[in-house]
Image 1 (tube, rainbow over the protein chains, first blue to last red):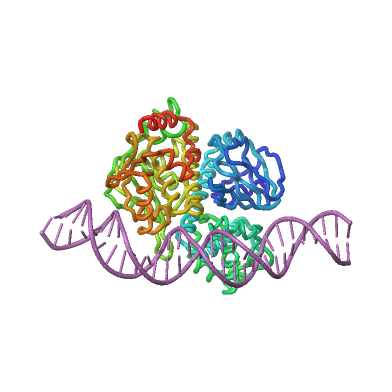
Image 2: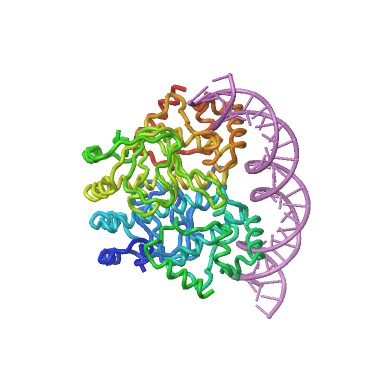
Length: 246
Length: 246
DNA sequence: CGTTTAATTGAAAGCAGTCAAACTATGTGG
DNA sequence: CCACATAGTTTGACTGCTTTCAATTAAACG
């Protein structure tokens, strides 16, 4: 399970064993639980094994903004290995299982194995890249394209860790949470979702979402997955396979 | 000059010599020059010695969003040391001097000196933190507080590298560029700047900006510098000194 | 000293927010 | 098994911050 940690970034042959050999503690959290609160000093690095979580910040006016959605396989606390106090909140969206690894163990493996260090660098830098695209999304796209882009990104990211079925995925976020991630109100989020649905660009069943016309929604979203830096692996084969099935 | 590279993050006694000993090439660029274009593969890491630069992305609709402003002392290309193709554009705002260090040299020093590796991790993670605050800013603050926050952040960051005079700094960006950084139109940027000026929260002379009442503008911005992770150094002394002078 | 770029201001139009209310789903306890 | 409670979804109406379009003034440049 911990193997997922780095699958979506460059692969290392023997170093992977070292990652798998890292000592860890399993822990579960309920939905809506806080893993980290702003200002806290975290002593370990959690890796998401199952479930969804998100990072958010609150303005002095009390407005919440979700700044990233974390999916299974994501390492949650590289930030807290190298910096003092947390600058944001980390909260679960669903019930969640994590593997806790000590800061010490992370530092040690990074120092003894350059390839691992590089992979950690890469995964942090990809997070940075995702956040840049997020900023572009928040600032320069209207609600409709913004939502479409958000859904496309999650589709590709989930696909990269093998969590999409043939044509869609489960998005365990309320419309209010989606709105907070997109910087729009819950009400307008609903209107926008319904609009995409009416257009036939997405299909819904409860909270699972599918894309009847993947190419079309990528087009309205202006979505290109290059910023996710998934070049090295099976993305093409996966996506191709999926599109054939649709 | 290269010393600025890491001043604002943890300091290392002897490791600093190793950084200063890094082989580099000096290079200058004119204002508005591209250092990196999206899709390019960069072979070296540039460190900003003087001048301003910014990172930006363009949507398929042709809208530009500035996702970060880089000031002297910033390392510009850690991203390109560990990832393949650039996912954004890096452009100068003014005439700029940079020191170019090869990817190889960066990788080597990071591997041989854990402290340097940690400092690079920290600086990338601070960039991530800044971008999260930026997302919060773009999504949850109105134009007035957004601009105020932007100006406060730059004040503190410039202050951390010793580039502010007693009560203000030179902001070499056009109002259109500021607008692109804040996600508002150039016209509204102008109105908002003028409004802050009318309120006496900022004072301007050409493109230099000063803060007659630092506390007041921090308050309307909801600005707290904790996300910049400048804990370890002289920020407090500097800011305190500045506030005394005002 | 004309030319170009940036800053400024006015007026009209629009996307999204807020307020309110109804509806649906899910779950709990009697 | 039903009544009620709670959380989330959906829809309407009105307001407002920003955008866009247009036009003018100021500043920078060769």
